Image (tube, rainbow, N blue to C red; front, top):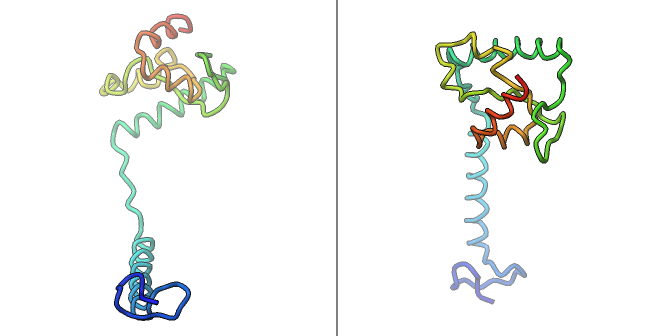
Length: 138
């Protein structure tokens, strides 16, 4: 039987690969695994949080406390496909860039609503629907 890889060495193995080709494959595989292990051992570089990120973390903590005090613990939008309490997050009335330089608005109760992941995805794509929901709720 002729080797499937090199087509010139004879082999008697059931795999159809000669020993020479097998060793090349085996040692290349070992070196590849060693390279992968070296990459895994490298420490991850964490992205530093900027000024706006720190402001958002503070604003989020303030909003979370305010929502808990008011007893709002489920999705406020209740759009089609709403998951009520799954993956709740804050949805802002405006896009994030609107709040640059206005950290007091970033954490304002009237600028956000609590929504589930499904409703948040729908609201992200529709500014008109977002305004309509805010007019109803705030």
